[in-house]
Length: 267
Image 1 (cartoon, rainbow, N blue to C red):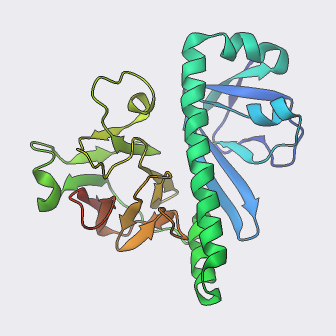
Image 2 (cartoon, rainbow, N blue to C red):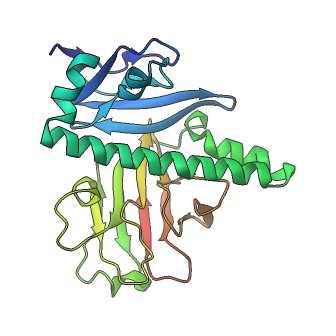
């Protein structure tokens, strides 16, 4: 199986290209984006252990998105003939692939829900919603030194002894801890939070992304949604992504009436 290395910023494949190969990330990170009517929109960032490009190869359709190396990235190049042996019949890679696939399905469902809500919203609200959905084209925030997450008085009793979390990798995935779970979303979370029934936090609730010097929170199709600085994301909202501002940012996982409330410090 051939192996390729892409320098930062190099395009791996372009939206509309023929689909002949899939890629397994050995090291580095890859940005997946699409060209939409509102402009270029970043869908996700993939890291080591994840696979991409396989759907177009399987259904023999042109690439539905563009893949670009964000850092120096090493990839295994998987042909259609090798896909079964290298992924489907490889227990370790199959497990990681299924986790990635389920997350994509959740994200696509959330995007569809937001799009349906946008069309149902009054016309005066649509430009604002479209701008939020196409967040990648927005003006970047000022450069910052660090990003940390802390509890608030509402959430401190649920997470006793929790220290401020310094966020240095992106995307940074946040979700509910599942006791005794050794795979699935638990293996993909960067911050697994305790919760009790009725749950406010979904297993794969939201993630924090970085685009240049701008930082965003994106709801991942959670059941109750996410609130960032008073803006509802997901859960029937027309918006999925909220940009963080320098200073303190409010982050609520679930409803405002719940106790899963945090502060994101940017600066």
